[in-house]
Length: 495
Image (cartoon, rainbow, N blue to C red):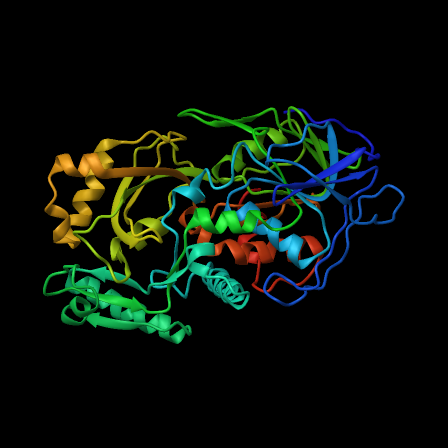
């Protein structure tokens, strides 16, 4: 990828902003807007960024009718913030900017939001499998708090969080089948309780009372977190996307993937003579931004590699794709669940770290039981983890492995015939953005004050999304972050 050294000038003759099927147009002006309240009811103090050439911030544009959500054809537009990636991380960052500051935002992606790892996930917002001693604990805990506050805000506005977000307080079970598992689970309950999370240990009999369908043998047990919740990723993203004044471009950032690498074609970052990046350029549009945030999931590495090719900046965002399968069974009456469930083995495989030189084509595979009931009443079973490059092809052998593994914990799953199983199941495949050290990268690129990364959340994108969004916005605005951001910095990890 080549970048041009150009001076900042007035890049646009008009700005278009899609809002609930209506587009606002402001001729020869940069859009500015503000909200009286922050994301969850409290205003965030901000430092204003300005892109207007004459140093003044223009007024809010007049609205005109526009039918549909198709991108508007134009050569260039200007915004305060440009975000690359419309998964849950990119969109929650956009929403945090728009509801917590007066900055304008554009989001760029290849297609509709939630079409990547976000939409392929299970949607649980759980603490039961988290380790309070881990460096991601505080960020996860803060993000869960923000999700719950958002659900309460929606309820206070007279709406049902279940319908809006797919939000359900289900409680979660981390289950084991051996004496060693039970020792680990008792320790986990103690850790969670000391960290302020309500949790209790359940013996085999107590577990059977709460979740009759599950079987862990006579030596098993479970850690139970009654306040854990889940949501529907598609519903949540749909709600977030309706935030007023998010400008979204689709089908402009094309991802061409094969087993070796992912190439994000027809995308360039334009730089100024001082070395800062001032715009994202697609095949049809140039989006000028005072701040640029790359939240492109497992494609972030190749994107950043192309961005810095030939430059003096040494950065390798080590995020790689980690493929996962989930099974969905509509109206699966033989098995009814009261809570979300996960086996202890999931924790080990999720948190496993690998040498930095790991070949991303390695067929390293793990399968662990996870089971939830979604907002539509469908049974969702998982999950697999596999380094298989950028392949999103369904692997029937893995699908069968997931089914059999779940059947070891839920005997009722063994009752349907293999023919019925194959006929009735649907499969989701997604690529989790994995970092070798198990932590996401959140923060600015060293040496570039206006270029930020937010990627590498692996299977915790939904779980850490709102905390990540809050952190990125505070970084861009120069505010103190609510959670210590130093464990997630790129410095020393990517450069």
